[in-house]
Length: 225
Ligand code: CTP
Ligand code: CA
Image (cartoon, rainbow, N blue to C red; front, side, top):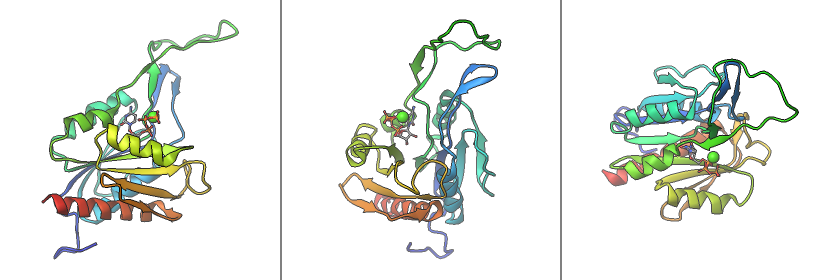
């Protein structure tokens, strides 16, 4: 980092970060979700704040304590996350979408607890909105950062997402690697930009990954100003 006078390189930068899983309701006592712990997103929020940014964290349910001096908004469903993100998008300089957003939600939700009946149960699902893809379409001045958690063909899938979602950076990881999966305190990622430049990082704490990512963001912001 090339620090400014205050030693806070991201001073005055508005950063919106999403973290954690979403919950898609079935009935009052059940939902669909995933294994996201929120640790990566919270680490980015905390680090961005330390580096001087004005940070808003939009988070699904996690067991983590919201970072100090970060505006934290709790949501549950993909639709709620979408609504809050869209609302804050115009005034954001950077959006980092580390949340593991559900791709599908039940078409029908039940107001009363679903009683067991037959031997099998079919729950029909529909697609949620791809929040990041929408942001890519609506992009004016924002720098967009996506995540790609994959189990195979990591580079290919990550680069495809970078292009189709109109992102500036994508953070790819293979969740099957030891120390890189959901819920761990460490991660092994490669960061791709639009110029085919990649930064392949070793096993690091999520705090260290956050720092490398924000440094890359800082460099791109400087180029744009
Ligand atoms: N994402 C999003 N809204 C969704 C689904 C995904 O904003 N409804 C974002 C995630 O937050 C992440 C990026 O898109 O930053 C990639 O998510 P990922 O699940 O890896 O990719 P998908 O595009 O959903 O494709 P697939 O799950 O089929 O690999
Ligand atoms: Ca997905």
